[in-house]
Image (tube, rainbow, N blue to C red; front, side, top):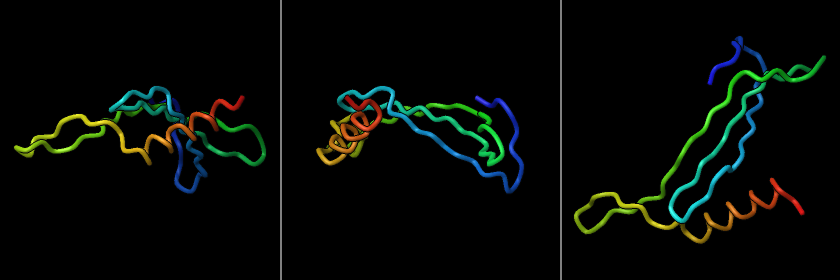
Length: 85
């Protein structure tokens, strides 16, 4: 969702968060900010992306499949970093 314009050579900061995690899919949330060394950052946009892990079946058609263990571990680390106890 577009909120404001950015200009060439503006420094843009992107923040990403894992908002939902299921067996075969995840939802990521993004915020885009214009970095300003002389003041607070200005939010430019937000967005989300839904992803599904797929593998090909015997007929080469894509079908949802659980995330590989390495990806699951990376997601779990991201959750722990995002919500530390």
